[in-house]
Image 1: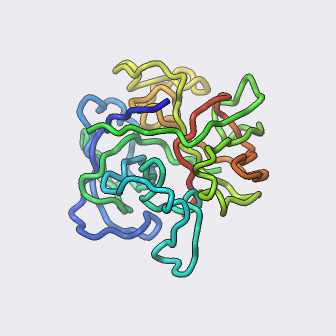
Image 2: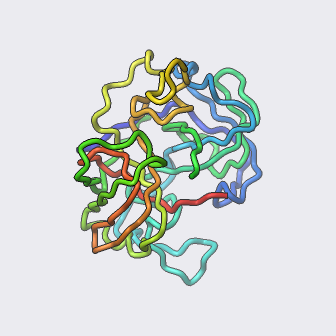
Image 3: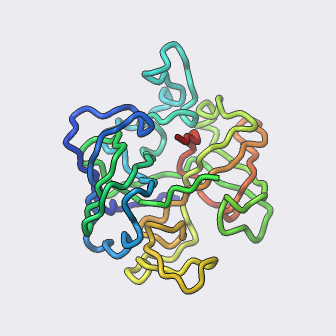
Length: 130
Length: 130
């Protein structure tokens, strides 16, 4: 059984190079959410952290050789794909936690960007820790 | 541009009723990952927390009326869908954090289950907090 998703918007950033992970990013950008979903953003406020689920839209098709990878910042290690955040994974879904800087209508200004300009957004969720 | 995903496995639990969120669940279950992805699990160890991205496969099709919802545990409130964990959302993707109890080949025993038996798994990621 397959699942087909339609992006709800796109991530914009002026940065041409982005850090490998949101935990090490100070880069700002914007979530440009399609107008049809505007009302769903009404409780997103500056200062909050949000989870953004997105499509690794520039990743190559998955192959079995990608089940174990060497992360760029861990040379010499061979790590199972489900234990790392690599964009090369069976389903090309990414997850980042961004800090909300400001909200203007369908544009959510965020900090902590580790995604390329033009990355399709699939979902926005509250950041919940326990 | 649409994105088509193929589940990598399924979540199994004997529980017929599950809590509304992983933060309030003590329920155990198993991730049954398809054998073709087995090698990707090699670094998943008991005691770890993992992020599981899954398909809300029993959710009704999304409608604009679902952009603002009243969560069951917050009566009287009307909250934007991107600020809550409702299964009724533009793209029916769920996210839970489970604790790994044990790993036997493609079966990952987990605790904290808040999903129905048979839920399709889309991805497993490391749990990273900052």
